[in-house]
Image (tube, rainbow, N blue to C red; front, side, top):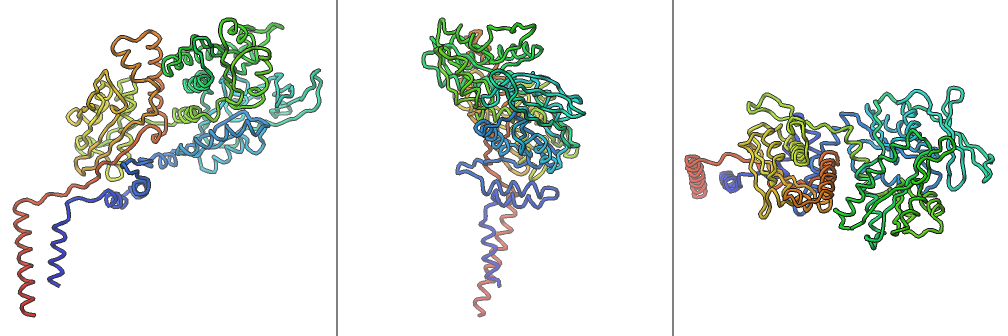
Amino acid sequence: MLNVATVVLIMLLSVPFSFSAQFLLSAASHAPGAMQKAEAQTETVQTSKTPSGEIADAAGSEGDISEKNGVGILIIAHGSPSETWREPVREVFRRVASELPYPVELGFLEFVPDETINIAVDRLNEHNVTKIVAVPLFISSHSGHIEEIKYVLRLRETPPESEVLTFVEGEPVRRSVLAVEGKCIIRREYLTPALTVKHTEEDELVPVNTTAEIVLTDALDNSSLLAQTLAENAAELISEAENETVVFASHGTFNASYFEKWIADHESLAEQIKLILRHRKGIPIEDVRFGFIHLPVVDNKTMHPELGLRAVVENVSVNSTPVVVANMVSVGFFTKKYIPMLLENLTYKYNGSRALCPHENIVKWVEISANREISTFVLQIYDCDGETLLNITIEEVGDGEICPCVASAFRATQLAFSIFEIFERPVRGDIEVICAHPSKGHRQTFEYIFGGENLRIEPPAGTDIVNLSVENYAYTFIQRSSGHEVRVEAREDIFPERFFDLRKKCKTGTATSEEKKAFKYAKDDLKSAFLYLPETRVFKVNIHEIRERVPVLSPVGIVMMSAILAALTLIALISRRKL
């Protein structure tokens, strides 16, 4: 017995005074009020850790939040009889659903009876959602289709009556929306070339059945992510930029009251596409224009006939080669057949199999659009007394101005807190931050949250306030009381192309006015990414060192332990002699 005790004591004395990350996470899972969250985190650390120590899905906290908030996401698209058109839209939906921590459903306005908006909302109801964020995957918010969607979502009471001539899979169709005996009906009259009716289809627009609050976001409009997608699609076709002009082609509208808003959005898109091509991609394109397939007619006169797609391409052809890209949600009749038909006998470059979906930028656009309506930027930290719980908002930290630096620092802190809270809620004065970025925005954020005495600014070698790189967007959070350390680093792919080059030119006063404008757009893009993309898209998380510090033995303690060990050894020897 005594020999065994001696061996055990020797083993205990030889164990380092630390615990592994897995032991800590396991122990934390038994802390009061932390069981569910800690179990999720333990699994993440044990099964998702890469060789470098990076955690693939850092906190697992967003899923818990979504359940508490009862949020659901509804992606809405127009629909088509063509599976070729529908499948790229479904691919966007699948990617969003795999990345957002909320239930996500897809609903089509028409043509897809098994995947309607109503069915999608019913599925969200099964998750007991109390708020639905509806994201319309449409080119423009200024559209009769958006009004139809509002009616279905109970965001307007009266049916939006309208009538247009259009095409469905190449067939001319008179599409009408009208109120009939208290119902809202979509009537599609399929026509002959002479515009006589061959046959008619009717669908009812039925308001959804839900008690959840519904918020409808804007459509793509002049989104920078839309501009980036169109620029990338154009870049694939450009070979002699000095002699080429980009023309992006959109459906347009028959409604005169909407048309000026379409023009304004497209002018903004044209400017953004040009700046992206010239200053992010290094393609010296001289001009970017736009043309519409449909134009309004008022008093038998076509509005802005010079903006018709054929007219624009003909005009461009006088001095350069048009590079035509489709500003349309998915590939189908309009991209593959109608645009080539409109441009028959003209010389131009075009890829009819390329549209917006399922481009990664469109996935990001859906995620950002949804998260704008959901995200709350609040940190909870105990004051130095350990008892007063403070709620710190990003607006307070930024003092009314939220730049990319404030956005990055605040979001990184939220992420670190979600890990610290597995163990205990952070206390002001107990956390030290090592920040690699020397900007005012970073310093202001961390000093406000933690206090200036708890902040160290340590830029990597070769970097300073003018010469920055992605390495500067790195933060180490150290919880002194426990020794838990979390390192959060921005992912390189969220930074716009040539971001740091443009920034340096602006900082040193060598940027042209066009470069300054390009950098402003890039900064806005980066800020949106930091604020609204899912955290796994924005940051890498490394738990460098999770250790629990235990008191180190004092000299007196060491003497006492040595005496005990000597006594046990002596007793063991005496016992052996007696035997």
